[in-house]
Length: 434
Image (tube, rainbow, N blue to C red; front, side, top):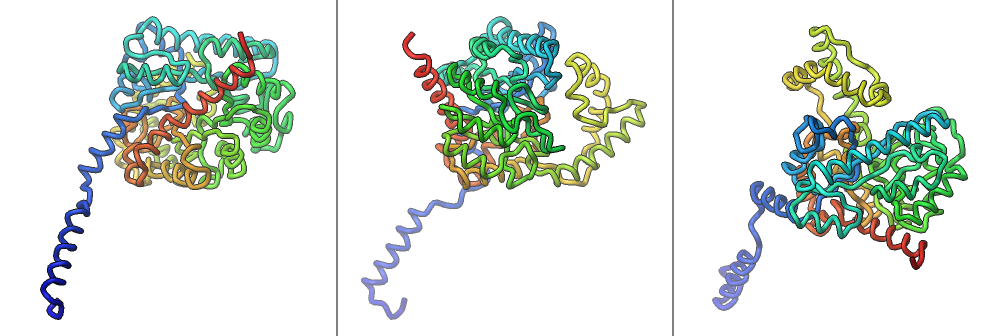
């Protein structure tokens, strides 16, 4: 600066000082975490898919207690999870009168369990929401929110009128199939052997789309086949959701949605609730970790003289009571495994891997069409978000990626509640006056 005159030097010095004063210092890790916590506390956090067992809805054992499962009221409070969609799920069975009757009875038992929790056991802690206004009111009151999802229309049976009945019981979204073809729709599982019943939706499935539109139930695309999903979106008068799916371009499994489906979902105005299910997020990484985990777990079980079920699908096909009894019998193995988990050298699928899917989806279809789900107590969870008590870690990772509070609020609940509002508005128009 020795060749500049005094006035110019002064101007430059003042400019440098002003620039320094206006440029914020780099955010420390402590400050970033504090900012993320503020965002997490202010937005409504909503998880669209949490499985339940009726065994956890009794006086002796219920969601007011930390049961050791992934979602319950204490864990929701600890993790700042405001809204849990509790799932009325029934596994796919035979397409027979007896099968339909049993599935319907099992479904009604789960509806009853949720109503018992929210209306009898703990109405001071958790309340059932039927609309987005209910959600906001209940959250503002300081209570947790329960909403009801229906996974697998198999339980509707052959009586299409059960769709309205399920809506009256509080159901606000439903998938037309699960793992196996239903009376309504082909399942994504048809990709295993290229066996299909309808090449998409059955005639009854097409009728169900119209019926769900009429009664304000969101159509869930997370389990049906691609053709069924494309047909459902073409037929639906209202936006749809995928309640617990991720991006197939990031991990090629049939439960994830490919780009063609995602672009159709965007055009439909719907939302995909990105799922934190390890094997859907990163199969290769999960397989390596699962192999190492299984080796350690089997070794522990052998030492204890306990026999483990090797096929996870067998576990989920068990009747609830039998499954609960099995889980109790292997609890000592699980406890020992947790104590020795540090022996595993493979890397588990984590929150960062999960948010990679969110980044991909946001880039492809836009922030307004992306949400968040866990599939807790149904196999979901990643390292860092393994139960509801760790929900903040998702918000923290989103803040690290540069998402704003408005964007995070949309993904946690805003987008899903927008779709619910639109579905219910359209239902009102279809029903007409009175």
